[in-house]
Image (cartoon, rainbow, N blue to C red; front, side, top):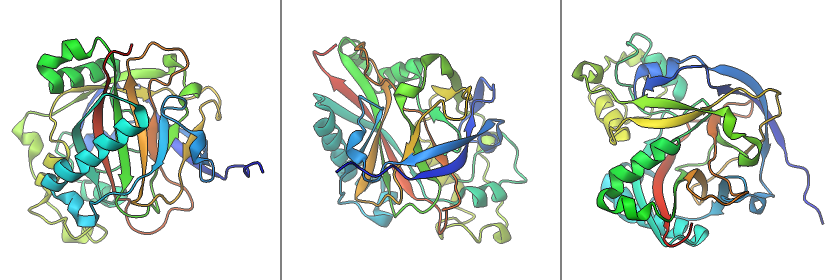
Length: 320
C-alpha cells in the first residue's frame, strides 16, 4: 500500500541578505538583515526511510541515549558517554572507518525571550545565551570544513585528507519538540551557485564579553538556569571553539518552491537527525551538504525548544 501524501506546513524562511561576515555569538548575529521567503515544508513522518545522508544530505534515525535531561549540561557526561554514542551511530550509518566528535552546543532557551533581554545591548556584546538559528545556513563552507579538520586533526590532517572525509552533525531533542523545529533542504534541489560563503568571526576584545545586565522583568520566560551571574558562562561554553569559521548562507530562491524542504514533527529524545555539513567525495549524485534552519509555524506551542548538536569529523580511509 502506498504511503499517504506528506503533511505540509507553511512558514517563512530567512535567506542570505548580502552580509559577507558577522561576529558569531554576539547580540548582532540575530539582528542581521535577511530576505524572508514564504515556504512550504513537508513532514517526513511515515516516510523517514526515504531520506539518507548521501541522497538528500540528511537522515532520520531512531536512536536512544543513556544521557537524559539535565545531564546534557554536564560537559564530562556529554564528552564521555554521549560523544561515544554519536561516534558509534555515525560509524554504523555511514560505514566510515573513523569518527571524531569535535564540539557540541546545547540550546535550551526561548529565542524571543533572549531577544527581549538583549534589547538594550550593543551589537558586539556577547549574546546572553545560544538560541536556534532562524536563517538558512550550512555550518561550514568547503574552506571552513578544511580549516576545522586542520585545527582538530593537526599532524594527521594531510594524510587523512588524501581519502574521503566529511563533517556530519548529530542533532537530538532533549525534550519533545513543540516549537522552532529544524528543517532541512534536499541537497538535490539546491544548486552550488546558490550558496554564498560567509565569514563567522569571534570577538577577542574583552569589552565584547561583558555580562549583560538582566532586568528581572525580562527573564520570566527563561528556564531557571538563567540568572544574573550565569549568562556569560553559558555563552562562553556554547561558543567554546573560538576560531573564525567560513560558513555558507543560501541565496533566496527564484520561485517559492524551488528548494525542497522537510522536517520531522514532534521529535523526541529517542530520535535524532544526521546532517551532512561537508563531504569531500567527488562521486556524482552524492549530497555534499545540507542547508538547514529552525522555523516557526502556527502549530508552535509550549516551552522553548531544547536540543543538542554534536559536530563530527568522519573519515573513510582509503576511499576517494
